[in-house]
Amino acid sequence: MSQSFRIAAPSVLGEIIEGEAIVVDMRNGHYFSADGYGALIWDAIGRGHSAGQISQALLAAKGLVLDDQVAQFIAALLAEQLIEPCDAALPAEPYQVDTDLLVNASLPPRLVRHTDMEDLILLDPIHDVDDAGWPTRKTEPAAAAQIQAFE
Image (cartoon, rainbow, N blue to C red; front, side):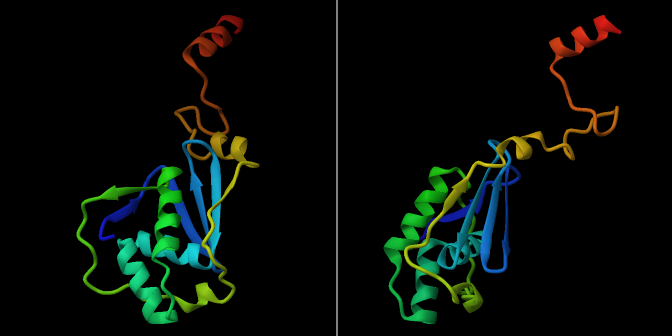
């Protein structure tokens, strides 16, 4: 598969922390985790590599043929709308596998969805700042009119 993908920014944020990819979807408040091979695939996609390039890198670094597992993990990312296809040119340099990500890696790579902090993520007070400042929560126009009626 030579299709390239990109992270669905700015709505999706991701970081690899101690070998685990932590991904937050600001549209629905879900966050995701993936370690080992999943973190490696997330990292490679963030660097513009295709599924084929990722599979080739794993074959070269670990002697493993993981075409199906890579494709399935990318399908899971697409299903959650965390990544999207793009027309960007693929990097000429092969993906360099970070072997630290594979220390405790298990197969198949798994994308785990967490919804326990959905309300807090959707609240997002840092970005809900208007001219009144923070911590004023934005209100709907109808609610704002009712508030003004009581003042």
